[in-house]
Amino acid sequence: MIQEVPLNIIGTLYQKLGESTIRQLVDRFYDIMDSDPVAHDIRVLHPKSLDSSRDKLFSFLIGRFGGPPLYMEKYGHPMLRARHAPFPIGDRERDQWLMCMDRAIAEVIIDRNLAEPMQAFFKTVADAMRNKPAG
Ligand code: HEM
Image (cartoon, rainbow, N blue to C red; front, top):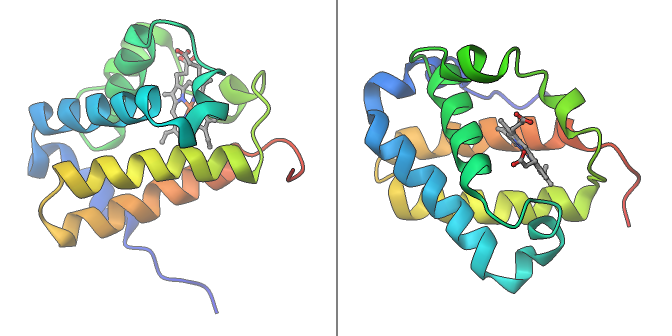
């Protein structure tokens, strides 16, 4: 059975959450990645300073959540799979990424009706970023 994911909500999140909550989510996400040893394997794939990573994910999400297309303006078309191709991403890396994001969502997004579709959205995208066999 195909799982029904209410992804239509995703395009309304900018309006529902506001920019500062999306900023908070991204900041908590990278703070967790930067400090929890459980995320070590993906932390070392990122640059030493996470400033640009924060700006890129924030800009991408603003647009994807229905706000202004900041990422497109600054960096061009997202082409997320192609941009992740240089980094070896398997099940382990995906799970570490989602662990950081699920925790950030749990802390920052109070409304369960928004948190659940967001988790489903990130899981779908993270699954699609895998480019190497598990291991
Ligand atoms: C599945 C596990 C994932 C891993 C291991 C991963 C890892 C990375 C790495 C190492 C970078 C480069 C960092 C930088 O340019 O500062 C990056 C960039 C990026 N990631 Fe991920 N990522 C994952 C999933 C995702 C997901 C699910 C999203 C969005 C929902 C996402 C959005 C982005 C964006 C927007 C960029 C910037 C791309 C660019 O402009 O070059 N990533 N990611």
